[in-house]
Image 1 (spheres, rainbow, N blue to C red):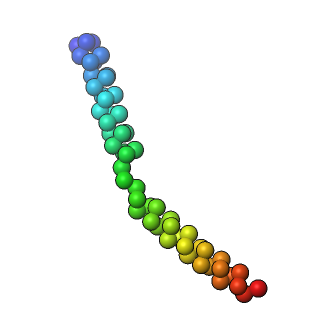
Image 2 (image 1 turned 45 degrees about the vertical axis):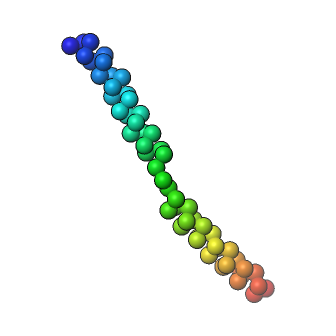
Image 3 (image 1 turned 120 degrees about the vertical axis):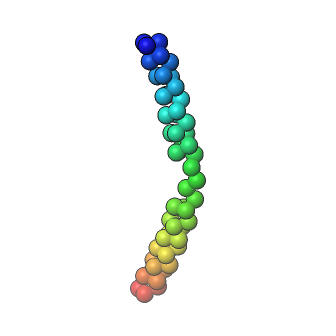
Length: 53
């Protein structure tokens, strides 16, 4: 039974590493689009504020 426990530890480590690797390599392009749109709105607001002085 002890040998089975020693074999399961690396198995759990491999499964955990696979889950972590999948989580890290996921596609996160939607956040970039929202951030760029927010930056464009910020620039437009700053240009409006700057032209009033």
